[in-house]
Image (cartoon, rainbow, N blue to C red; front, side, top):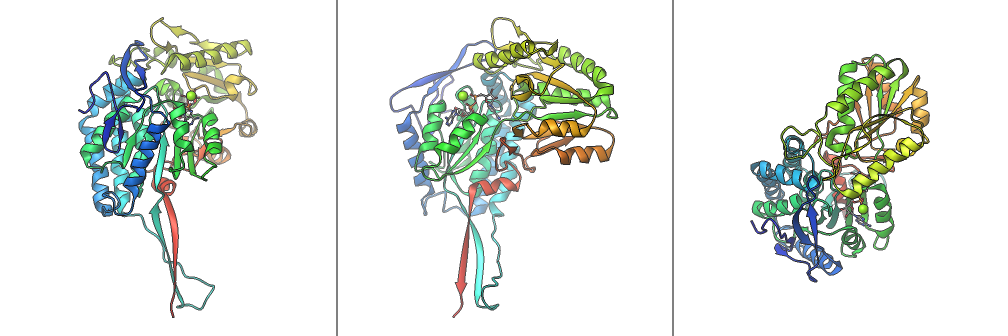
Length: 486
Ligand code: NAI
Ligand code: MG
C-alpha cells in the first residue's frame, strides 16, 4: 500500500501526493466521531496539476490512447477482479467511513462496484459508428459514416452515500470510452476511492488516466471551472447540480447530472400487503434513507392505509440501529452531524406543520449520528417533509382513492428519479408506471439496480443516464466522416 491508514495522499499523474500548500482535512467515523484519516485538501493549483496530468494522458500517442480496445477492456475487467479480491477490506473501510452496515457494503456496494467494471469492460470493444446513406446526392457519390470518439478529459464528482459504487459508476464507463479522468470523492467519505486508486494502478491503468483528488465543494468547483476539462459528470444535490450547469458555461463543458429525488411509492389495496410493506420499508430505510432513489413518499389506497401504516411501524421498530461494523446492525448512523441536523430539522418541521409522528423522530444516543427510523402520517403535499428531499430515514404517508389524485400531486414534484407500485393487477401496474414521470419504475419491488439497466432522472433529477450502454453517450462524441468519390 502506498498510503498508511492515518495519513492518506491523493493520486495525480501516477504519483501519490500531498496538496501543494500542505492543506489537509480529516475524515471521521460517523458511529464514533473518531478521526479515521487525514487527507489532502486539493486547492486550485492541485486541480490544475490533476487536469494537466489527465490532458497529457489523453494526448494522441499516449500509452492509454495507444491501447487497442480489447487491451483497454482487459484492464477495466482487472479492476473489477481486484475489487472482489479486496472485498472484505473495502466493505469494512466503506462501513467505517460512511457509517453504513458492513453487511450492506459486502452485499451491495462492493460487489456492485466490481460488477460495474466487469460489465463496462465489455463495451470497450463495442463502441461503433454507422454507415449512413445520404439523399443529398445520387447514390454511390458519397460514402459517409460516423465514428465515436472519447470526449476527452472528464471531471467526475461523487457523493458520500455509496462512495465506492458511485466512483465505479463514473469511472468504469469513462474508461471504456477511452477518456481520462479527474475524480473527486465527497469530503465525508474519501477513503475507498483512494484505495481504489491503488487497485487501478495495480490493474495496469497508465499514469495520469485516473487522477483522484480529495477536497470539498471548493475543490469540486475548481474542477468544474477548469478550462482543460471537457466534461463534468456529477452525482449529488440538485442545488449543486444547478451551480455546475451555470459554472460550466464558460467553455461550454458537456454536463451530465444525477441529482436528488422524492420518489413516490404507490400501494394499491389489492397488493400482496406483506410483501408491499417489507419492500416499502426497505425502499426508505435501506442505507439509512441516504439513497437518491429512496421511496420516501408513500401513497396508500385508503382501505388498507391503517393496516399498511401498522405494518411499516412494526418494520421500522424492528430495525436494529447501531454501529455499521457490528454484524447485527441493519441501519447505521447518518453520515455526518450536519446531515443528522438537516434530517432532524425536517422532523421538527413535520411536527410543527401538523403531521402525525407514528414512530421514531429522535436522535439515538449522544455519540455518533444515529437516529430512529421515522414515519409520518396525516401529511399534506404542501408540507416541507412531503415536498422536499430529506435524504434520511423519514417516510411520509398519504392516503389516496384514485390514480388521478396521485398524478395531480406528482405534477408538482420537481424530481423524477424513481417510482414504485405494488399491486396484483397488471393493468394498474402499467397504468401507474406510465402515468408517473420518472427514470425508473419498480413494480412489486424496490432497490433493484443493475449495471445493464439505464438509471437517471426526469425533471430536476438530472441530465443523462448512468449504467447500461446508455451511459457511454455521456463519454463519447460522434464524428461524421463524409467522402465524395470523383
Ligand atoms: P453536495 O451536492 O453538496 O455534495 C456532493 C458532491 O459535490 C461532493 O463531492 C461535494 O464536495 C461536491 N460539491 C459541493 N459543492 C460543489 C460545487 N459548488 N461545485 C462542485 N462540486 C461541489 O451534497 P451534500 O452537501 O453532501 O448533501 C446535501 C444534500 O444533497 C443531502 O441532504 C441530499 O438531500 C442531497 N444529496 C443527494 C445525493 C444524491 O445521490 N442524489 C447525494 C448527496 C447528497
Ligand atoms: Mg454540500
